[in-house]
Length: 367
Image 1 (cartoon, one colour):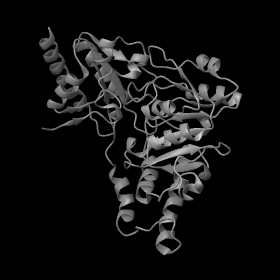
Image 2 (cartoon, rainbow, N blue to C red):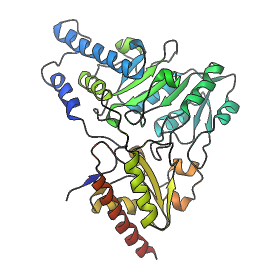
Image 3 (cartoon, helix red, strand yellow):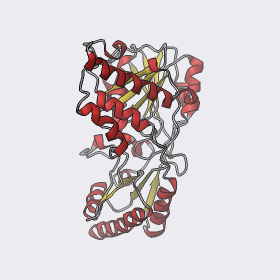
C-alpha cells in the first residue's frame, strides 16, 4: 500500500541535507564539546557555528540561544525558571506548558480563554496582568487547529508592563517567518523535529537580561543555563534544518477543506479559516468518534491524528476544542490533517476519498 502521511505536526521526516550535515558528528567527529583536546575543540567549534546560524535565523544574538533536549524541555525551562509569582497562560497551550504550570504550586496561574476560532483576546491579557505577574506564555500557533495567535500584540502589552513574554513557537517555525525582534518576545521555544530536523534537540531563545533559574544543573554547559553533555550532531542538524525554506501549504489544506464541505455533510471546521498555519486543518465529523476515524483512515493508508501526539491514549476530548466551546460530541469526533513539504495534490485527493469512505462506514454503524 502506498501510504500517505498527513501528520506532519506530530513529527517530520529528517531532511536529507540535515542528515548529511549530522553524519560527521555521528561517526568520526565524536568528541565531547567540553573537552580541552583537539576532539573536544572540534565539537565545540561545530556548536559555536550552529549557535551563530540559529541566532541569525531568529534575529537574535548568539548569547541568547540555549540548546535543549527538545521543545518540552524548552517550555518546562521557562515555566520552572521564573521566580514565584503570578503566571498567565492560555487554556489551549501544549501540555508541556499546562502540566508544568500545575506543578508550580508556589505560583498563581491565570488561564486566558479563547474564542470559537481558538484565538486569545489581547484585552483579556491586559485585564489579567497584575503587579506580581512574572511571566506570560502564549503559543504562536496551536498544534491542533493551526490557529495563529496575535503574538506581536500580546508581546507589546507585556513589554509596556515590563513582564517577560514567552511564546511556544514549536508549530510555527518552518511554516511562517519567525523573528524574535519583529514579534517582540523575550522567550521562545523551538523543536527541531517539527521542521525536518532531528528528534531530541530544541532551542530556547532567552533575551539578554531575562533571568531564568536553570532547569538542569550539574555542569557549566550552555553558559551555566542548561547542564548536560551537548548533542553535537543534533545541534548541527537543528541549525541546518532552520535554514530550509518556509513551507506554505495553504492551498492544499484549503483544497481538502473545500472537498470535505462539498462531500461530507455534518462536517464542522475547527479553528480560524485563514489565520492559521497553512499546513493544518481540523474537522469534526458528527456521528463519528475520533478513534474510529483515525483507525479507519489508517486502514485506508492515511496517517492522521486527533492532535498532540503527547496526548495519545487520553479518553477525554481535546482540551483545545473544549476551550473553544465545541460540544463534547463534536470534540470527540475531531481529526487533524497536517501536511508537509512532500505532500502532493494527488495525496489530498486520496485523503478526501478515504475520508468519505470511512465517515460513511462509521455513520452506518451508528445509524
